[in-house]
Each structure stands twice: as structure tokens, then as C-alpha cells.
Length: 438
Figure 1 (cartoon, rainbow, N blue to C red):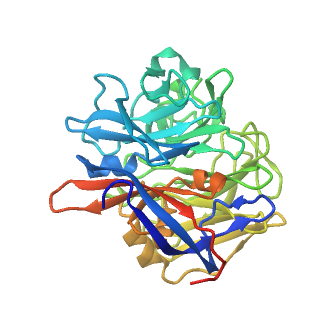
Figure 2: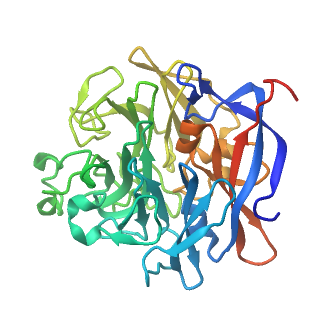
């Protein structure tokens, strides 16, 4: 299909909307009434490395989509793609900058409320977050590499991998990443757009919790949002976080931790607990579902640092809990946490009046999820994205752009006859039709 081709009449199940807010919720839920979308391929290219190009996610802002992509030789490029189908601009992220073949070293891109473009990536256990920012708003022609400019000029964290940006409905930009120093944990940073400085949402690990560890002397001045002191084999873990906001702009956070030593996972990495916390002040303080305060940094271990433990591991041998828990908002403005168990399947819990209640377990979840998330670091929400009946196979949807506009910008991958795969950036716009019409 040539770039710009239009497909009409695609029937999708409707993604639930908040009628009071007039915009979709971020949860990808099905309703009985179908919704038609017109889909237009905005841009497509042959991916010289399917893994990294797939994981380098597309971002929508105003009238454009932004996408990091790789040229042969692993030269890192950025594309600015007009949503009206106009000419696509491409430019080097930084002249001479190249990445490597390691698929962990993908890139995330986001645009802050002032229009500056932020890129984070090319990391696998890197000492600090590698971060670039455009010199001018909505302009890809020149970027500044901020990482050498000081701790507060980049998202924070030490020995880092797996970057991801999140953006609140009022435009506040957050960055989440897995850290390996001073311990394995999650580092979430928030951007002050006026000063273009980043602050870690968390605190230093208390010395009394760290006294027996060899890295204790390296802990000061290395804050984390959440952590645990167990691991697989020699201590490896892969904690991840997921964030969303409700109609009152409350930040809801779900994250996974490993709170028990296990043998080496041999490629099947595991967590033991899925936890939850919320914040009403952009992450300066966090609370459990019943409103009680949590001391930072958060843990699964019982005590004042413990967040809400929504789900814990099954009995038996690991792997136990999937690495990418998810939090969404239902039509009653309540948080719903989803946890994937390698043995028992998908579990969903809703917070109502300060208490967590499990919803009906999906019997088919185990086989569905295991086939839909081939990589341990995949977003667990991809299970729902891949159920959408769009004309191309969905790799990633910018859910926050959909939340704010009702339009879908998604990334599709189309197999071809050679090892490379074709990447398509697609815009799907709701068609004004009578609900329920087929």
C-alpha cells in the first residue's frame, strides 16, 4: 500500500470514553457498539533492524508524529511525520551518533508542553540516562545531548535500561527506567518544563536497609522510586512501572518487584509482586489505595515503605509474575490493576472504597498473553492492542495521544520476503457514524 492510501469503513469495537470529560479513557476496553475509523498510512520504511525499530515508539503531538528509526550502520535518525499526509522530514538525532545491534538499546520519544522534543535511549546498563532535547520547539533539525550537562538536565537513574516516557492530561512529562545501582529498582523522573530540569520521584535508600550490601557506600545521592534487595541467580531483576491518570488528574502507578531470591531464570525473568500507589502532587508524595502515606522509596517488603501489594506470586517454581503490570481507569473513575501470572493467567483488580477486589479471571489469559508478549520487556498492554481490528498489525499505539484527541497514531509491522520488515506509521480517525450501525 502506498504512503497516504486511505482505508474506509473499518469496524472497531469502541474504546470507552468518559462522557464528562469528552475524551477516551486510557484503558483499552471493549463495548458492544462498534466504531468506524478511516485509516491512512502516513509514512513507511524498510526496517534494517526490526527489533529496535519496533521498540522505538511513535509519539504524536499537535499536527505531527515523531519516530526514531535506524539507517544501515545503526545511524540514529528522527522523522517528523505530518498527520495531514504532507512531506516527511528526517534528520540525524545527532550527526555521527550511532547505536549498536543490541535490541535493548532502543529509543523513546516525547514532546513536552512547550513543544520541545525529548529522546531517551541507546542504553543497556548505561551509567546514566542518555537524553537528547531539541534546540527549538517542534524542530528536529538540531538536538542537544543533555547527559553531560548535569544530573538535573536529564532524567535520572544509574546503570539504566528500558526507558519510557509518560505524559499527564495537563501536559506534565515523566520518564521511567529500570536502574541497577545502587540496587535493582525503578527510577521515575518528572520534568519542570519552565526550567527544563528533571527530578527523581523518590528518595535515597535508608542506610539501615542497606547495611549488609556491598554497594552500601555507593547509595548516597542515588535516589530511587521503588526497589527490592532480592534477585535471580546473582541478583538480577527486571522491575518495570506503568502510569496513568484519572479524570481528576490523579497519578496512578503500578509496578512489579521481585521480593524473593530465585535461581537463574534462563530467559524467563520474573517478579513476585505487583504493587500500586497514587499521587495527587505530581509524584512528590505517594499513598496506598486506602489513603495512607508511603515513605519513599517504595518497596514490596512490609513496613512504612510498602506500597499496596495488589497481587503476589503463585505457589510453585518460578517464573511467577509477569514483568509489566498495567493500571487503567474504569468508567467509574476507579483504578484497575492488571497482573499476569505465568501459571494462572491474567488477574484484574479494582480499587473501590480503599479496598482491592479481584474481577473475573480470564481463563484464556495464559495462552493469549504468552503468544502476544514474546519479549519479557514488552508492554503487557500490547495484548489488548493486538486485539483491535485495524487494517495493519499493531505494534504500538500512542495511547496518550488517543486519550487527548480520540485519534489513533499507531505503528505497524508488515513482513516481507527478506529478513527486513516494513514499518508503517498509521493515523486512524473516528468516522462520524451512528453508533451501532454496521
